[in-house]
Length: 185
Image (cartoon, rainbow, N blue to C red):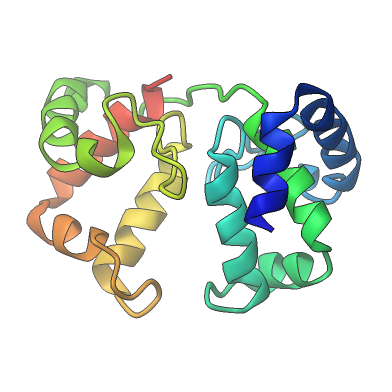
């Protein structure tokens, strides 16, 4: 499946075709993740601008129930490998829109924490790397729920480096990072 993704990424004509097919196949996804990949609900992630390899990996984890979400698991299991690749390419081709900032007064502190704790995996601009997620422009509520899950439910995503990082942050530190990341482009 990753070779299918790489083949499409390497060919402008195949990529264009895959994005068009992905747009059609993502019709159900759009109810929550939006027509262009920007979430319609603050607790659901933006898929726009997300790394295609990361999206593809998440489809696989949901389909195999290694990531547990009733709706996403059911949807992922009903998609072919080709559908998953095309939808990943479709969403990765769209532009993410920064969301609202819950605590603007904490942005500077959030930037400092981001630089010391998040850059190694998510990059200077929060765009991630291949199989690591783009966190820039994610909705604040989604970021909060995700970080809270790492803090309170380590079994949900075992062996994640996030377990150690979130353990170092106070509640205010977490709010600061969320405020900074939600506004990143």
